[in-house]
Length: 197
Image (tube, rainbow, N blue to C red):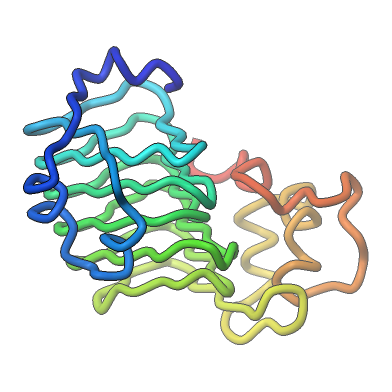
């Protein structure tokens, strides 16, 4: 969703920002924010970019995907539910994060912290700063960007993603030396199109 005015957001006060963000590193990145007091349901996707900061004090339910670019911040006071979660920027969830598909973070710019449980079909996490003490995945893949697969079964990941999707991230996760057919195809959620439709 690009039209944030339709979300019923208001300009957050300094006090609301301080109250909503407990991670000091994330708080240090935020000067201004838009806030939704209470729960928020979105029928499509939520993509935050260009320095956008959104705070939802209650639960955030997104039918599609949630994505933050390297400059964006999303703070959820309750639980977050969505299809996929793409992490470049900052994320703080005070409750649980429940994804039908994938949690995917490799870009090193942001900080992501889920205070509750994170549940997803697949976690694919590289050098992105990720913190969650209670993680539950069918497949957990951890890697050092473009160098080493540290955890996870690449054959099982290929089976879940399909050959086309896997080829797009295989070099990034250290499972192949071949360049993706479309250049930097590992960016975004495109590689996971076949997961949790």
